[in-house]
Image (tube, rainbow, N blue to C red; front, top):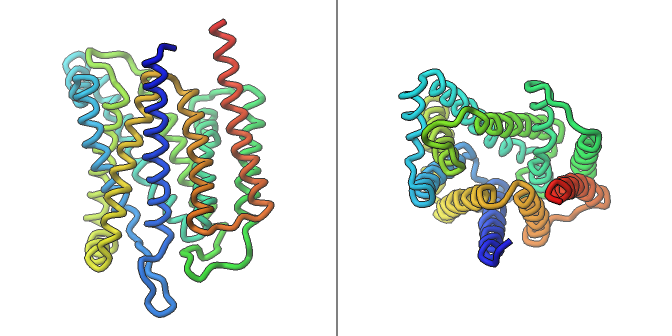
Length: 343
């Protein structure tokens, strides 16, 4: 690897760490920490769908700029080229994009709802386990079979999440949004993870579609998907949740201006983090990305423990060890396999 490639990798990984570590801390701040106390009652921000909408809007804008500057390409040209050559191909792309956008739009708010019932660290740990839902979707929908070690890794990750979630202290913090309903929280997390698996598996399939005059890039995917997520979320809010999301959020940010700053910073950092993800995928490979994201999530958990005063039991630390041990082992096997192919 050339020196400039090494420097690019270092800058990309550092950018991913800085953006997503800050993003993760703001995610916990917005969704689980009170902005005020009225008497003994904490006041939480309770409009997760709107936060998701704002983030999608900024990610769409950043993806558009990223596509034009880095690839000299209008991301929406892929539909024009498909339509001119093959209307069936264009319709296929549209169906894939809509399916991914719908699953993404539902998954994120469903995961945030789980925070009412489980700790943020359990939420973060579960969201680190994308291997499980991706394997399940590939197995059920695409009839994919996996080598034995993948089932072992999936078992370790599952056991780790169960250990972490069930080993928490029975004493609840009065300032916490968590009501202790673990079963409901785990069901909501499982639903969110399953939707994530469907979304990621469908993303894999969309890149396997026949090539067209304008190649589908990560930047194009980022722009188009986030635009669809933003439009779907806005439509749902206006039709079904206008008072609970839009009016509520408007009144909340007027009363607590800091919440608006948190939401905007969260959205911009999330959009920037997506750019570094796609840069690593395009210039290097998924092994490096997996290594960077796994270590980032471990650091996020450590920062959350230190900054927000979480106390982990022995069982919870054991659960963390199982999860990241399984994910780390999977990454090690992928890296070893790639080195053997290159020899």
